[in-house]
Length: 393
Image 1 (tube, rainbow, N blue to C red):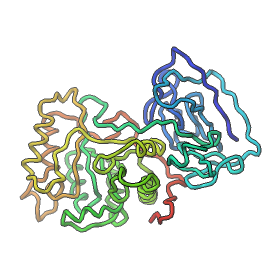
Image 2 (cartoon, one colour; image 1 turned 90 degrees about the vertical axis):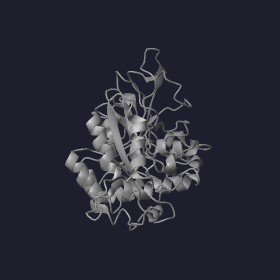
Image 3 (tube, rainbow, N blue to C red; image 1 turned 90 degrees about the horizontal axis):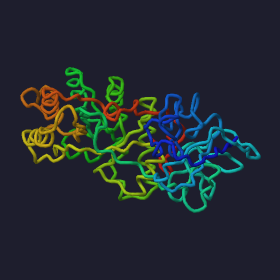
Image 4 (spheres, helix red, strand yellow; image 1 turned 180 degrees about the horizontal axis):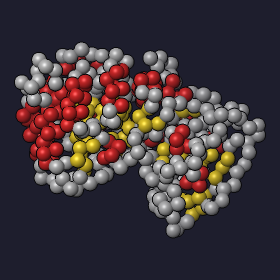
């Protein structure tokens, strides 16, 4: 059954609309179109957000059907939209059963798309402008509300420092995890599925499936796992369908390896544009950049030079108020080589930088704690097995 919530303007309502992984409810406000307000008062897309005690007055809920939020606003400037204390509902005839997922048919005959998906003019669920703009069927999914994912560059919690590693997993990651265990630090890994650029490091190039145990170990140890696209693709250089493919193919791998799918991502090279940010928003991603860059991606730089970048970029900031996210890469020997043939003869940047941060009194945390957020994961869903015309494996 498809229900429609009615909204009115309330000048006393909290502002603005709440975004992904922000708090929602009577005291915080309404989630943006397509997001569910969970029983615990957080906006998101997962079944934990959208079922059970989902707060239908403050967002979309799915209980065998979709509650469609009226999205007459074009952007987040319409900050006074709030639900009434009661909701009116209408029943579509015939009543379709079940939610429809990526590349599945939708509409009056088939049913509503799952949260975040648009029901396109041709009657298929998707994330691209072809689905979400002209002819989009607003009664069976969201339509283009022009909301783009925010790109986060620093922590929200004062005094926290999130150390992040891109481009792995690699043959170096296990040694890095040993060190992180030793110093009791939780980090964040922005993972690729098959990054052929890693050939530049001189180390073996292995896929996420070949290093599944390493990814699983990091996850089970409390490090935050995030997406970095399947093939380290610069998403502003490809079409919208390819952006979706890069994300869903890696999501498929995560669902197989972890039984969870991360809701955080970092675009390769830090590159996004309007179309890609719209897609990432609809797909439910927290998009993360950085505000500390030791330039460890450049093999010309020495470890001393990279370490000095940490000091220069953070040394004058109080450990009580600073909010840093650093960019590192666990594929380069200079950053993360703890193998016995190299370490401790050569101390890699990972150890030198983290030891420095801990000595200064920084609270080094994973991304979720840095953003004052619950763990950034959701349950797998059928969209994670849809890779367009290409194979997911």
